[in-house]
Length: 487
Ligand code: BG6
Image 1 (cartoon, rainbow, N blue to C red):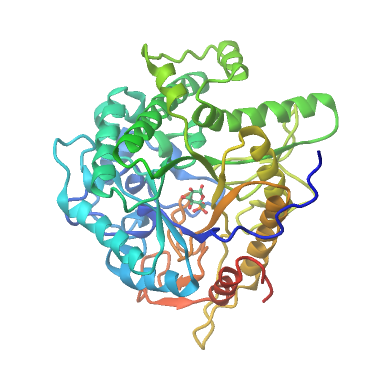
Image 2: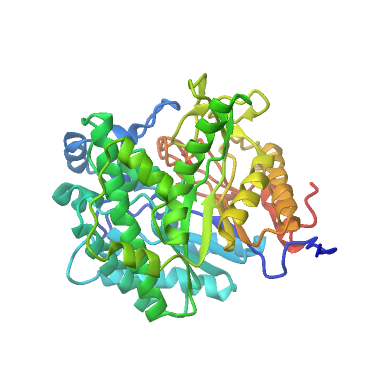
């Protein structure tokens, strides 16, 4: 039987909002007992094509620890959300946010990652943020690990390479689930978990001096520990706060075959599988066969404890979230590479690029949503999407960011197409509703926000918050539940 009706609108309870991460907005890196994180030992870079975060080694960390200023480490200062959270949340509320995605910095709660007792000042800060959101009826969507693990765990046990990190992380997750029980309806375990295959920033594993083969071995092992920790966190959440939902989070990077040549089609299929592998494990609860074959062929051996597979099978996530910025092209013989979200990929001649070389592909978002819905049949959530651009503040204190409005409009249009295709989509949290420190380059001048923050790359500025044109536009989008996308 064919259905003759299909949804023509976003559902009434669609969660519109924005997303940030502690290390990119909070600042206050050395107050109220907070420990340093992996994000705060990476120097800023002026080279947009080279992300310095993956050259980190023991020496660079020691140098960072000895440096007590934020000058070269902008993630230490963020945009001082720590002291501006009331003002910022009020602005989010003015836009009509239904949800705000933010992360809890593990090192605010456990400064060394595995302290016996939590730091009350850290818990109190997030409690104030959550209570402030509740005043405006904005639901929290909390990421438990957004590229900011306590640096003490890297120095002591090489981050997620150690199985002991599972225990430390799950002590942290249990602590926050208990403290915020009934107040946080949606949680995510690891931000863009797949980027753990790219290096230090996601796993805290120091391996920049290892061979590529050894790096892959170490990274997939660390990721296995994250899978187990994520499943244990899901178990804890079901026991502590059964109404809350747990999601996984992937940097989804759809790749297209470079040509119709079957060898390119097959190369693209393998690339895509290696991206979706993470969601396969977290949503379906097992390692897929294609990946077991890839591991065997590449001599990668994942060490598992006796009950790991049972835990993964028993505690898959409730919903699937992902970031979407770009697509890539894959050819069996690689071809010309473009820059991208911490990765490189093949150039697509049909797409335009952002100033940072990220290929802009709104239709790709529909393709992604349709394919992921077919593959998983679990609710989907777009928890990051946005445009990093250089904004100009005019003399009358305005920012005319029509390019950002265009970018977002086209992506929202394609999300709507996907809902009409039948995809169950829970919400959309645009990345960086307020200007923040870029993750990959630590620049301030790569701005994403609806709200301009008066701060430059050197950290100078009043930190005043200024509404851009896109602020008023997004407000209208939310008020019309995605129907009115006009300027
Ligand atoms: C995602 C990350 O990869 O992309 C965010 O989850 C990051 O932390 C965002 O900020 C945009 O990347 P960038 O490098 O422009 O800040």
